[in-house]
Image (cartoon, rainbow, N blue to C red; front, side):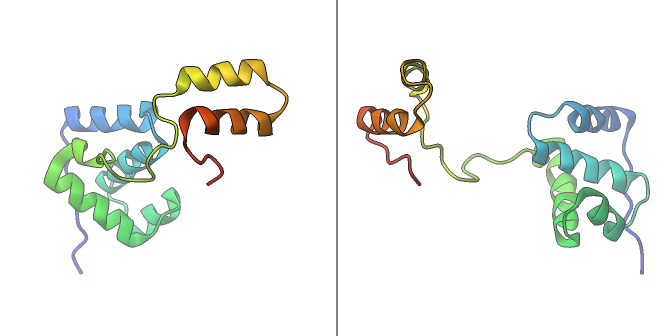
Length: 120
């Protein structure tokens, strides 16, 4: 059985290391870490244990990195649950400042103002 290798240039390694240490999301940092570990010669089983994921996910991210580069490690638009409160940030702040001790009143007030069911 041939062990898959990833060869990284200095620029690629630097970009992945920066993503691993300073990435915005934990998932992006984990994906960068997976690629860095693989480039160090680790096997997928070890990488899965280190990053607390499964082997198939390791292979999926390796394939995506091969196909799309570091941009492929970002979460694509439309993935995950849509936001309930998107543009009502100021309304939320106002409600909280008025009723900072009673969450149920804040929820009721926001639900009336936005028309969104917040109790999902």
